[in-house]
Image 1: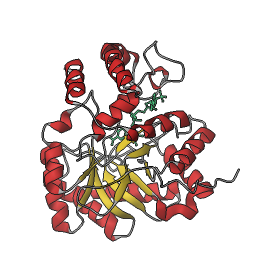
Image 2: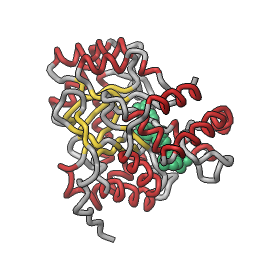
Image 3: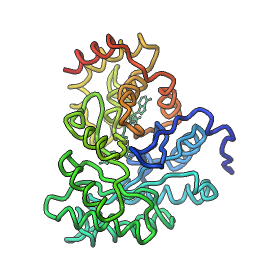
Length: 328
Ligand SMILES: NC(=O)c1ccc[n+]([C@@H]2O[C@H](COP(=O)([O-])OP(=O)(O)OC[C@H]3O[C@@H](n4cnc5c(N)ncnc54)[C@H](OP(=O)(O)O)[C@@H]3O)[C@@H](O)[C@H]2O)c1
């Protein structure tokens, strides 16, 4: 089957600037952490990429370790890219990251220049790309000077292997310092990728302020708390759901401890005429400092549902108050 992207793909998606920079990202971006590894069905992944692009999702987010096994999401993406998207390279923002364990020995994880630049080369090879649009330091390294990690990001851009750089999981003070170093190096920080959802709110205690001051974009990951913030678990744990799988980081106990709040939030979503997933994404997008929400999906139906969010990202004060009451 030859994939021909829909001509009207740019008609409805909203695009937001990354902080003060020129690059715009779709308000909803798609991550390939789950559902694109060798344990998954490649044809389903392919269909999801098609649907996403047809809906104006121009940003696909990867990392060296996505799979399982680690690296397989990049490899599978590379095959799909070659087959369906190679003539659309200039319409796509493809990101990758390095920070977590990829190979044995002292150079296979964290934030040294040795690891980051070797990992970027490996990612490009797996994906069959000449460059990534955004290359991230995936997590701060407590044992490597920040200068070294930032110099490696700067080098990635200067060598033509990345167009922009980002940081992920950096706390507010380190993000500020990283931004200062990157500015001095002449490769300013484009974007920060933190975990943020109704259930995980650490970014509100300083990080979002730093990003605004520095003119850096923000693309929250796991905005649905890996699917907890949806109607998926209202009647138990469905087969094939992330919580039912033997790999990954969402467990039955997480569902059990969240379900009470999820049920109450679902009632508010219904009153708004939205699915709970849509309300959870809208709740993040209501803040002007957010560039894009970085979702995961296991079906095209979920991608459709999530993009529909953009029809209503406004909240009344009363709705916000009720949500806060449930979340506290
Ligand atoms: N920088 C980092 O350290 C880091 C860490 C984690 C993730 N990320 C990035 O963020 C991306 C998203 O993370 P995530 O997958 O955890 O995000 P998420 O959007 O919170 O969770 C995605 C999961 O939620 C469920 N879902 C999505 N839409 C739904 C809908 N409309 N209705 C019902 N269920 C729905 C699906 O679960 P089922 O599979 O059960 O159907 C889907 O796989 C990743 O792919 C990756 O690119 C980055």
